[in-house]
Image (cartoon, rainbow, N blue to C red; front, side):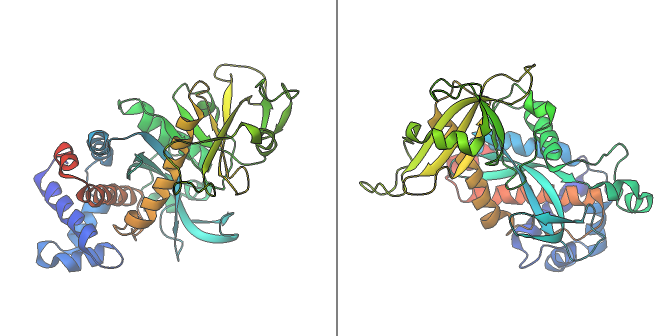
Length: 362
């Protein structure tokens, strides 16, 4: 932050996110801080100030490279239920996971993840067309010119591109997990040369190119059908065994070479369809698609499990530091709040790690 007063208020807001009980609204944070800062000043700092959140997010990503260390970027959506219609980007959509329609904001987070911890470093708010064609709503929320409507997959692709390809960070694999929203990958993402692992739905059509699945070469089937045929190719994943001598729950993985069922072109070569599951459970439990066809399946399995790490940390830490608690209307305010909440998440995670990690982070 360029100014000393911004840095001071940033520290105050961060302390409020870490210390305020209950909802981390600007009002509740101001009440906790008392005479240190007024609610009006804190609101201006978040919604109307001039500091740019992007350099702060990049600095956070740089810190976590050494402190975790980061093994992969996990790109995954976050749903923020809302009661009203005034929060920027709020709309009604059907959630396959919940089985009903809800009023909410949807954002995509990019998380720096390791086997032991994960921290969000970048965010992109999905904006429906209803917010972009309505001049009054757009003006009140201060949505920047040039912002366009995106599907969830397009939103995730842009978040991935900015973080993994645009920030000059060390190359890491990217794990893209859109949950139940199994949308087709945008062309820019499908053609990328960056290491990528994408969760796909059971009905995703793929063409088998693997000779290990005899008689099925060049046959187009669903991902679930292909992995069902690969049941005998499953193997245990080292390092993820349950209690010694107990086969039930043993982690298993299998990989089959496939291709997207469309004409060949740049970036449309062989892919690896990866199935994950456990011994004694329905197979496959998860389906992933990777452009890293020469990497051992055990490595791809461990990357897929990083998505579970993010899910756990989102529930245990992110909600506790108020990632979903911004109550303002503005686009810039939302971004500044989730940026500082991401820093608070990092503080909470690193505070529980050995001192060596904290020294690295400093």
